[in-house]
Length: 382
Image (cartoon, rainbow, N blue to C red; front, top):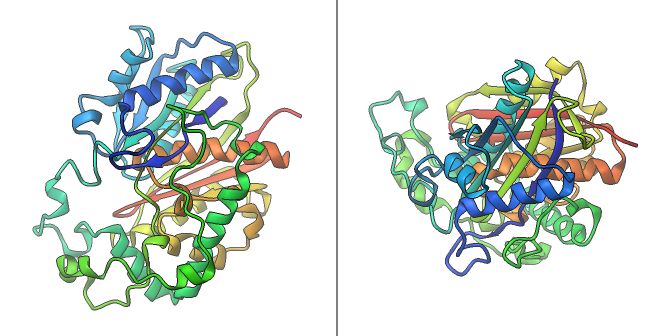
């Protein structure tokens, strides 16, 4: 059985030149989180493995970023280090892999999470053939997630007003969470101690924004299959950002420090590539089935705001109170450092459970081309 001793995260910074973290290296972010976990647990960590999610594994994040981070953090030579690219769910997948290593007896302690420095490694910087390969079956070809979001909103009958409301709620909750226990596991880095990407709008200012992604549709017309009603604006898309998240996972007695939570169940799924943002729902349903629990059993939920349509659809279609979901804000306000996001959501979930003194929490993440990941944790302690 796998336990989480701690899970920490950096603030999310603007992923561009001049952003608060842009002058740093991704391995430096990870190293600072390793140090934070050691300080918070008052334990010298000697993990058997370091597993890191990163989507752009080129340039500053190339050369096995987990291995580079191991060296930067001065972890033992015996620590295995490997990097994972599972698109936007990579950070959560890394933690799931750590739990699998613990459960199978391969390790006693594992550090796992993710990092993405979009200021130095931009979106699609790896220039993969997959992004433009027209030899694949039509439904399997890469579709820009923003366009998948617009198509899904139209197909699901989700209005522009509903998207605006989701963005505003995310912004307002992010602002309200500052200086509270909801950010207790966020570690200040390079002088940044808040969510740099947050821009607090109003219903009127959000309504005034024009759809942002119609211009890209011409490049994907064959995949889209039709003209679509573009509804997502820049406010309905998570800001490009830099950030990292890291969890220490181990057996119950691996450290002298008490664990914060138990990992109840994990699920990784492959879904319909033509409806890429719905795979998170499939992962959620799978992890609930594995655990024997229901959404009603969850005291807090972190549901990845991979464009506004995803969170609107989730709250609309399932029997869940919006008061339990993303209570400290979400990606639409804070940003989405691709490979790090899943681990950041997990750290956030533990904080929200602590504040609520809840028992069970759920993380749900989705990525392009039908990738989904989910995890249920049980909070321990008083």
